[in-house]
Length: 75
Image 1: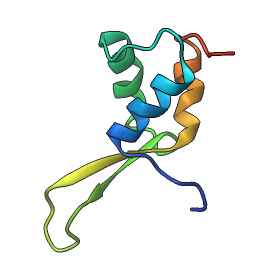
Image 2 (image 1 turned 135 degrees about the horizontal axis):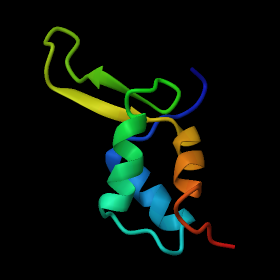
Image 3 (image 1 turned 90 degrees about the vertical axis):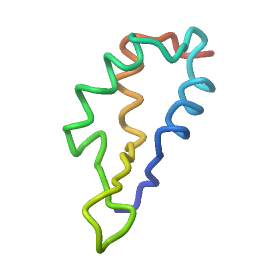
Image 4 (image 1 turned 30 degrees about the vertical axis):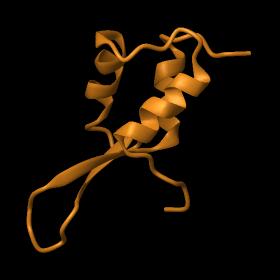
């Protein structure tokens, strides 16, 4: 894939670093949840290849383009 993927905690940390007005509120989740189904932005992986669960969501850094639309990028 070439691009590193972030887990949820890393995504939140990147947002805190990038946006001056970032808060982990419904505004954040309102952007994140709908795009999770798009493989361009996120994918879900099994943590154990033998078992169907547990699974974990990983985010492509390109998801920040969606957050850029609603949060203020630090300068």
